[in-house]
Image (tube, rainbow, N blue to C red):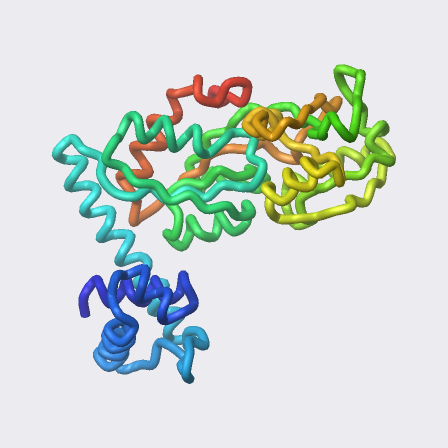
Length: 303
């Protein structure tokens, strides 16, 4: 057994396809399949359900996959620790972020890359629940997510201050003369919103319900890009954190603050406690605790 076999196994789980897994590992598909067969022979159990194409993992394969992730995380941590001993921070930092976060994850990455030029980054967008589970499985190093129900027993937590919600619209199709809007004033406005499972959408729904407003959106999407394109075409308006609206100034859109717009729970950066721990994650987390200016109005709360 060697590390590459375990990397092949994890790549297959991530891609759910033999050809794509082989490509991501820079080997041919026959090589990847052969090495996985060798791993199965060595362990004496079937890991992968096969026909002519990938059909998932066997129950035994799922258990071995969890161990493979831990071993790879420990191996990567060992290499990062060795680099850290020499005064360098080298490796890949894996970050998961919720859509429409009031802190832009690219700002975080940009700041870290200027401090540690040898670092590489992987950024994924998921729900808070997915991010928490991925941190537990060592599939992510840091999570930018909502802190509702977050346990300080299991996570290091860095809370962020809230930023206002704004209504984003195209000035060729809509006009608002007020400096701020109430939730009641949005009751009959065509809206494009995230899907109901997303935290930010749930916060909007709760804000409206608190003042007796029920506005069913004309379009729902789990893609912020799709919502922005719908607004650009004049199909609807949408509700975003201020920083997201400002980041899309080049689209020719305008925005106005929504009174008392707040999320159900605060946003924050989290890192899993326990072993195996990532020296890259730990150093980056500690660095961000003392670096407030990248967050502007959404700066880190003091603890």
